[in-house]
Image 1 (tube, one colour):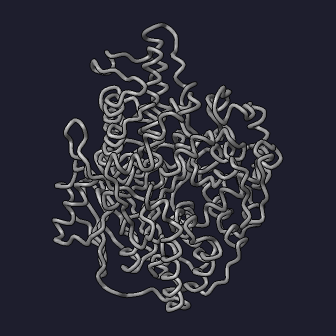
Image 2 (cartoon, rainbow, N blue to C red):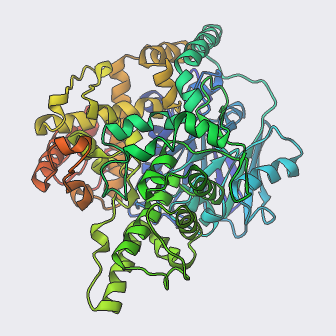
Length: 634
């Protein structure tokens, strides 16, 4: 198929065998790339009830059609696997400079299987791939690993995906870094790499081989036009990064405060973003390859305690989860916590959530200074945020309770109560997650479709994959013919279909393996469709692409069904049913179990699933997945 090599690189770390295989054109046409192609592969190759940390599990890295033409936003690569955090399908996307090199090497997909007996890294160039010793890299953080690989290979142009110490020790929130400033953050993919003793995947291709396209000249010309459009449209993000809208998020009632118990952070949020951040941390924009926006932050400043901070700066999720979530408004401490998570190779969303959990436990007396080696864990204390982040990321001290994620930690604290007071501490009632994946910094209480979407997504609660943030402001999905208004935010009849369309629509850019921030800067759906035709020659329509997203969503759900997930796993935490007394949410309805369950039933109906949340053969036939019915659980 034009725009693709149609090749996957398979690496077996147990046997050392490396091979190249063909990807079926039909699979590419129906799923385009990214998590769609990964789910198509995993549902065929991994057994039901696959243990994430067994040899049966596989890690799949995928691209899309844009990486071969230097399209704006095409630095994205997607990693998919069975998550050690959720036990189900997970995909996560990163940027940097790796994707274009892997595409030039002649592949769209990399499959890692088996386990190495010792630390190794994979090196890929135009000649092929080679497994190399990584004993000297083991133990290095994500930034130093990249530097060391460049030094060993003698080429600063090499781009490397790698894990930090968190992945090596199996921290279930461990992520995968690219070039020390972009991370595929969610779901513990780094722990799977660590379990396989794979420290890094380095790639550099100097050659200029180009993937065949329907109209390469036209695609390259349109790319240049899009660069100009997105440069102008992305001015705000270039100046302020993803955290630029933090003030608006707070005003809309979506900002996490006091581990989801608080309601307003209006007085302090101004200290965590915008011009204040730029000046305080001496921020400059950092660009991924082929990006005219540069939403990543680079800081260059000395902290008040004397430490030099010349590293990746805070982005929105850091500001939310390691700032307002723990009531810390000192940017230097927020940045220090961010840097600990980044260098250890941890998701700073979960890192902030876990510290928030520790602070709430400390407030209730469930943990004390004795549990913390004489340290405190107070809301708003920057030193406690930094200390707690170290514990969580390196699973040290009481941080060991997080070895099985937030659910496991809550169970351990509950049991601690029995030992100390003869009654369980109510820790399981205060955690905020779905399927053990901590909520990101976007409160879904502002619209029922957002809540339903968080509960039903394959990888767990996620603002990005839900595609539903706009519902809180009454925005519909006009690209897919779906109208929605402020009056519809708590309309049970619309909640299911709204959640479905949001999820499937968000899959479009994800399957194309492109940066979602470029969509808002001007690389919108009409322009994506135009570029797809120039590259592939296929004249996709809006609804064709929505069906691509629907196929990917169905395959992911089927994998989770095979992992034992049903309606019982599509839940919301107790805190999401707490009323708000001040701020934007005070004027909104309070969620009840009846409201949520009704919305969930409408979602299953819209999806064509059973009311226990199971995919059906009829639904697979409807969206052209007949060949995969055999993999649906009976």
